[in-house]
Image (cartoon, rainbow, N blue to C red):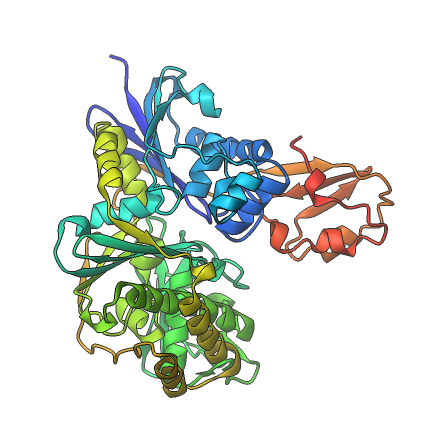
Length: 538
């Protein structure tokens, strides 16, 4: 009897996750995870900028090539794949489909008309693999869930749907924490939403020793005597006790079975270190009060003052976004009934530490950790394609108000205060005084005994028999520039070592490249020959 398979894909800003399922039994067979995104840049805005300036076709090919590699790594007979569902934010799914994206970049009807941009439909879609370039059974069906206009993407719809808050009376805060955090405040069924570009630090990227959540990453800490005990993800992404280390000098007080197995620190680990550092006094923003100005962790992993400021900015974006939504909705943060935390960062972080550092409102009473709702919804769709129609009806009927943080005066004022705290050491009491001067509500005091509900044991509940971690996605672009003297200045100034110059050809590894937000390669070229926009696929 012919086996029948399905594939669920989550395209995140920092990487791609996919699962293979047996359609007969609904069993998860295998899981694959990339530790990087194939498009240059550290956030979704960088990806959008790249797709517009270098070309939508180029961005689409880079993304689809990586999705194909991820799907192949699931060890399936691809001719027997009958269904594939993909979930992500509007930018990622638009690049996946290779449809118009400029409406996501330019604000206002006048700007769109001036540029002759017609926004595409982002309703739920069923298409064929060849239409998007997928290398699976050509007769398979590819399911793409809807967005609400361009404001609430399929990933945000996933967290709202999986949390169940759309049908409840009350006030609920739902967040999918990541490089580009989707945050929604739901008041008696009405959704106030925003996207907070918190930055890559929240997922362990652009942290010197940081990594995405994967085997061998430190994901949490707790006090143990005069030291800090690390918590580390094992090969099955389960949390294990690590060593107890003195954070000021790195001396190991107590070794564990995970000794020598730490490969880096993920975003939740950085948040935990930030919390413990503030509590113990080793961190006095923006400084680290150790002899070498580092926080020392297990297996010679450490955090720098630059890392601490980066995570402070990310956490500040969350707190400023939460306060902005509350002000726009006319509710108090302390009146929120329940908080839902989605995504790997929202799952592995200790919620009480999240209260300490501002990732969620400190007054939160009931906290639910949901895991990867985006991948979970893609999985639900391939197992029950009728769900796609249900999601479209929800999208059509949703009462929503999207707040664009880039143009919000509330967010601008509050985030400026956040920067003053993490970069200049402004005390928190002064922060609240400024909120009062602006006519905003103050940040409420911390709830000392929140109820925490952890739905699963890990952010992806089932991994199947095989877990594939892809450290490299093999995405490259090549170019030859007229006037290039091969002086190597571009390669030498690249902060990520993403460039190579050989025989007149310049090759960039796009998964390492910081993209349009960097462009040191272009700016440093003494001959002004380097033109990033001229990169083409090989």
